[in-house]
Image 1: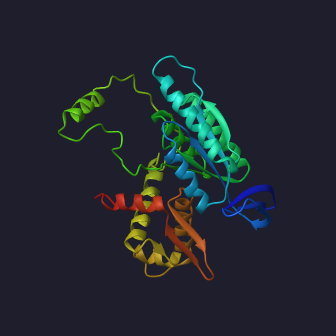
Image 2: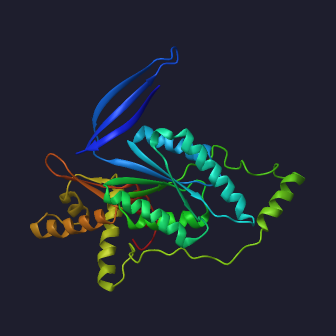
Length: 304
């Protein structure tokens, strides 16, 4: 098994210390590699009730990205009520994850996942620091509280370097007691669905929205949405601005039309709905994964 340890980073070059463990003998071979890397990625794991799923998530992303750092945010609340149970699970899982994933040099950060302000400051602090360092961020919300999940989405909407993910369980109903129809299940179900609640807590969001604010923006937005739907209807990709102009019903792609639709494409790219990559001869325009979902939803609306 080969385990890599990053020793230094300079000018988009990683110096990596590879340790090769041989299962047949006790000797260890150490090899130094110099690897060019252009997108450093860190993981912010909001540790709560689960160990295995967050652990598997880190392993998955480690295979697909050059994960350079792991932040384990755990509940450090000293409570005496029922929330103490969550804090216990969060702390134990964070400690075990830190031990198992020692190679990623994990940093443990305590916060209150049941307090909006505390959760925001903790998550925002890590993501903001990563942005300054030019790092991409993956935020794991698999096993944290509803409040921390909402805050994570808020922070991700504020930064272009942040993404959010969750690791689903292999058995979605693992926590259910008994089978449907059994007295054991009915007792569990009745208890679960009649749990007492507290007052709703609104998750505060940034002011910017994709939807328009003014009548002028509304007109522009309708044109942008139409472009997304047309992209979807044509396989999710246009080989050039000329294709899009033709889809809108224009016979010729004049300079005025090219400039007009180039601005529309730039706006949609800024909103994270399309990618526009310059090829050898022309700019290829395609829907992003979220753009595909949004375009599909738009296509089902009668107004578009």
